[in-house]
Image (tube, rainbow, N blue to C red):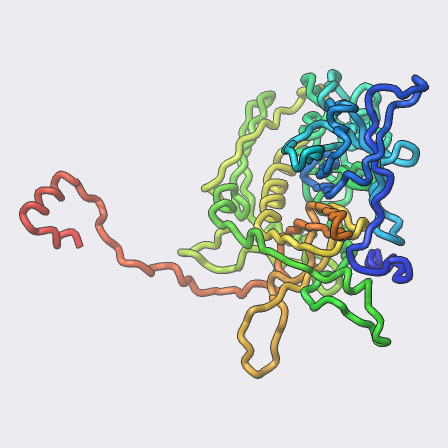
Length: 496
């Protein structure tokens, strides 16, 4: 896929942050004067700010409007949490955007009002919160039956079946392996999808576990590795390249270069760079899985080694040919008191049932192929988190890949200077997008939360054990009663 910003027409998009926000209406649950169509009120002039949020960790779209109300819409309509919301948001010349209109899109549903305050004698302000219809529907129904097919088709049925979510939106899915029988315990649809997501294995990729989420283009059900690659040996191209450069960039003719200026990072923040205690506690680098088969009365133990598994999956960083890479993981290769961290699995032990013959000869997911891979991969992504604030563009969606050139803060030495961080620069997965529209400033920005599970340049390796015998050994077992006696006798130097 080419850079998404190349689809923009500079003759239409005149400045970074420009947007089209139109036809903002609230649809009442009551009918209008002709008793056939719902009562609608246009609120374009009352909307001061708009926010829309999507994330691979959230099931549906959501957002809010900051309203300055001089017509008492909240009381006159009235607003009760049973209304629909219509509007359209697009970046000029982009084919991608948010269509929440009734005629050509999918209206959102108002579910809450907060922060309602008086701002003048005849004026009030409040925040209207909205979400997708499917979030409301999820609270109204449950999945009562057993299903017998592949997990991807089970999720498709839950999404599309009018007895469950009954969604009219597109559903993009990655085919999964195996035919399974799953019995639901009267679970809400999203809870049922969560159960399936944990055990779904891709037909094409080595990783395990899927994500279910909504973007402006519809619902998605796919694995992390499919977000990173298009084939088992081909990395997925990045759709944008962001960098921290001055604004007002001009092309060779002195004209403002809108496409490049749209990819300037207004601000950035490294939210997390590593959390070694969290990774060790959850067995990211090494762990043990004990499975129990109640039918055959057997126990099986399997160890997970991060270094052995790393090269079998795609990661955000690739080799020079766009293939899988074995040397760019988040764990440097070094010896720690005789072993690497990947050789110390006993700190984290997982237990799982692997009982066969539960549904006759129906295949059930094997935790030995799922649990350890899934947990290590997901927690590896949580180790490197970047937040970018950039000019708004409705073409970017959660689940896209981007690149970011992280600034380097090394002092200048007079020699050749590398202006980019050699480890944290590179490819990132966009895990969430928050669009923010400020009507007063006529400005659209978006906040991207991005994660990566590898580094652009491999961390330095070390073959010498630099940890062993690096601290003074003390006896350290002290009876405080005896210690108090020694203190009183003035002999405390004994324990130094």
